[in-house]
Length: 225
Image (cartoon, rainbow, N blue to C red; front, top):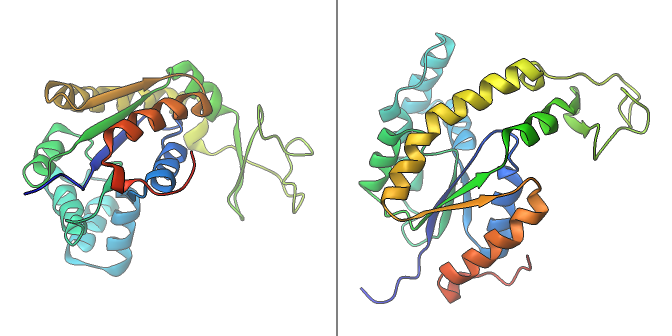
């Protein structure tokens, strides 16, 4: 078989934990393919693949997409990447999905971003959006030049329903309930690595140092942290 040259990881973190930022930095610094399950799902729905049509039907009826459908879709997307190092983002979300992934691929590391829920609540409820453009502002660290107005158009900003305090609290509780068994699953396999903190820029150096040790040398890209 020779030395391992492929590194496969998944990343978990609550909504607002900075997971997207950390994922893109990992991809840039280490050359891993960043595979977002949300992007894969949307691509399949838009392309009207068999699985995409099935998923859209579930979503339209307000039903959860079954684990086996999600797993089949993600695993089919991973075909052809046998020789690639990748970072899965948004999958697995349940133990059944983790077991389906494990039946085909060995996950070398499960990176868990542990950000206090109070920090996330403050982060998300401070977020305001210019809907037509998608520009996002944060009252604390990226405020608009004029309160409540978009910098470019001067049009009003809104707070998405998803970012209301009540909705954020509910989403965080749902996330914790759903993902705790997945974290325990990977802890039992000895591949769970948790990074705790309140700021992405302070968590990132620890993630970078860990992956520098963990990833086979020839997998690292030349990009800087």
